[in-house]
Length: 476
Image 1 (tube, rainbow, N blue to C red):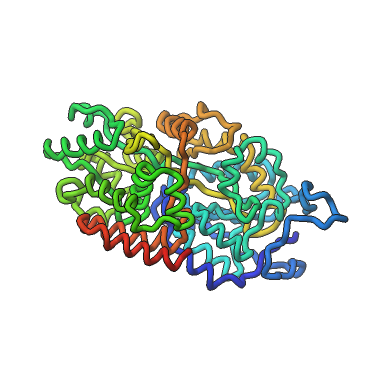
Image 2: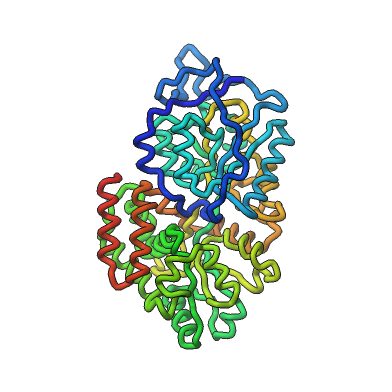
């Protein structure tokens, strides 16, 4: 059976954007080993010669009309095994494996799953070696764009994907997120809100406060915890993407979505812009003095991972924690005796400027084909069905929110997941994770380092922003 891979001429430019994985869609798992490495997929003797150029989806006039999918062979029952790579581990991995089992049951095609937290670093190495996974679930649109530009990803037109379920169950705005150079390369298979602020209802009630609607009200709560001898905040700053998520939520609430995209996507807004400086000042208002407000102080924050920081709150050693809705999975796993919605819950990241309200900063994982085969086509088509997404919504652990409109939020058994899904659906402003939109050198390395430096010394705002701006100047 023929599998087509693309030429590997892009090694040098792509390594420039290979960075430590950030939040992302999904930044919701600790670093994981490869749990099941699929056998190396070698090119057959019949393999299409590599040209180093992406095939066009447009047919010559004398061939089939452009709207018809290219002719590809159908996968035989029990077709060749495919490897799917994603970042998910622990409970989320368990949930996704149930989806993969459903795919195999429906098609007879076996799947090997590779859990790789450092996917944006490991994946380019795999592709450069001529051994890509068949499908990668990629969180960073900037990485996908580089793959597309260098001709190493297949558009859905290239793959011959039947678009029936995709067009029926996904909004155009969702499809636009996975469209590059005018063609669909990635279906947003799972999405999440990164605008959820975790708290303990009993603790907040004892403090005499309601959940905050505005950022100033949040500042009042933090100050009240300090006055009562409690540590208000725990932040897992060792994982630099958690700090970028903080910045993104603050920035979109101060500057709005248009400025947000101009900062991250096009760099029309400088990192020295007054709106960026104001964002850092507002961040400082919350975290300083760090020895009073952050669990472990600045040094502890920058040496604590995001799951451990959440555990500190759940164990009773701090009161508030900001990160995405996916943190509920880790609470259920690490503190099974606690009840979500009762012992811990979340409120929406508070409003700063009323004209922007409470935008949702979100992430997600795009299904990208790196091998052209009937099995890959079948996998993508399956992932677009309401049936596949219903399996994912009802798994015992690791349920994921889907943008598939054929799936009701009522399917989620967990009340917090239902609440997150409702938040995403109701959002009047939804922006994708900014660090994932930016070039890797900016959204990864530079932002991680600069924001960790800021936590270490919140009085120094200019230094970190100058550092990011220098990186951005050479990255766009």
